[in-house]
Length: 202
Image (cartoon, rainbow, N blue to C red; front, side, top):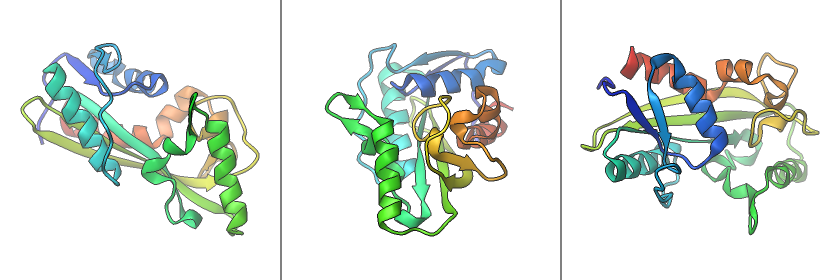
C-alpha cells in the first residue's frame, strides 16, 4: 500500500457537492485540495460499467494531466428490486438538456419500483469507490457502502443526489434530513474514506 506524501491533492470532480464533502473529509490532514474544475481539466468519458472502472478513468486522467496525485470517486445507488439499477448510471438518470434534475430522477426511480410492485422494505445501498492515482500510473482502491432502503415521499433538503429518498439502516430519517456532519460520519463515501486514510494517510 503506497502512502500519500505530498501536501497537495487533486480531487477529480466537477461536482461542487462532492468537492465540499471531500474537502471536509481531508481537512484534518492539512492537505490543500484543488478540483479538476478549478484546473480547467475536461471530464473524461466514463466508459466502464463498474464503479471502480469509472473511478480509475477519472483518477488517472486527472493525475496524468496535472502531475499531481488525484483522488476520484465513482458512486451511486443500487436498488435490489431494480436488479442493482441505477448503479453506475445513477447520475445519468438525472440528465436533462438543461443539466441534472434529481427530483425527476427520484420520481422515476419510485415509479419503476411501483411498476415492479417491489416488496417493502425496498432495500438499496449507496456505494462509493475511491481511487487515489499517482502520475506514474500507480493507484490504490477503497470501497465503501451504506445499506438502507428507498422511501417515499422525498424528505429533507440537505445533501445532494438521491439523499431525500434514501433512509439508512438504523435511522428513521433520510440522508436528506440528516445534518451534514452526521451524514459525513455514516456515508458510503466516509466508509471508503476511512479505509483510504488507514491505507494511505495513517
